[in-house]
Length: 104
Picture 1 (cartoon, rainbow, N blue to C red):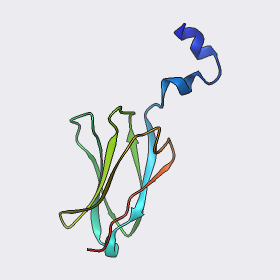
Picture 2 (cartoon, rainbow, N blue to C red; picture 1 turned 30 degrees about the vertical axis):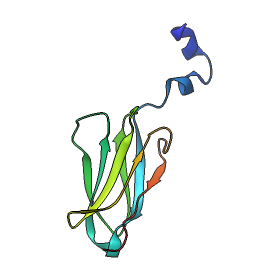
Picture 3 (cartoon, one colour; picture 1 turned 60 degrees about the vertical axis):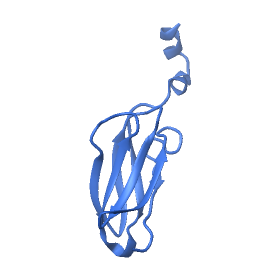
């Protein structure tokens, strides 16, 4: 039955998304240098981290996770923005996920 599924159009949607690239976009407060990180909530894996400043658009590769992921923007050792999301639901391959920091 599984083999037949692959022959039918649209079957891949039933299996859910595969690993993929998406973009985190936003602005740091006062154009300061900040850390942007993406972490899977269902794994003990090391977060993917980048230094960003001003307007940013950073690519990340993630795998689908039943528990989702968390993106955090930290400036001067203080979390200024963060959100949880599910890849394949809140953002899809090639899509953008917005996160921005407030005033410091």
